[in-house]
Image (cartoon, rainbow, N blue to C red; front, side, top):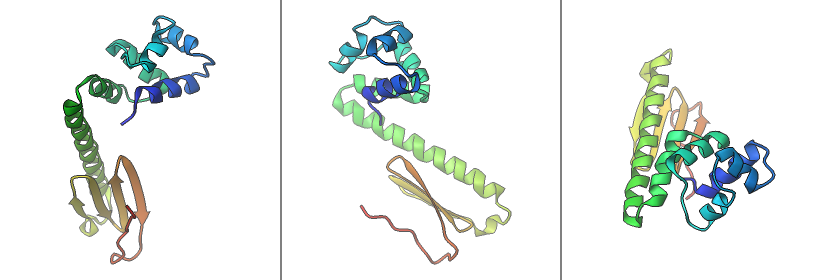
Length: 149
């Protein structure tokens, strides 16, 4: 999960802004707003949407993350779990689409785990672990990828 600093820094970099004041102008907020955010205040939903746009990030994810940051710690864990489940579901749907498109789908098999998703699609392993996709091509179906940690 990203934090507010991530969005601020990415927006400034992507928009080639030299100061936080310039970012405030682009966001149409007071010139002290970015400093307020760094001290613990949160942007409005509208400002967060614009910040995500300037950063080139997914708006829906940014708004969900904003609500996570605003929430008490016990609720934050629930939101984090929901985001992980959504990411896992998206991977499964995309992978199933790839299996359907495979010329010989009889070679495809799948297995899913709560914190990681692993699919073997015609000797290609697609691994989703800790928010990162890993693609590993193997030419021997007996070879199983392994990761430290």
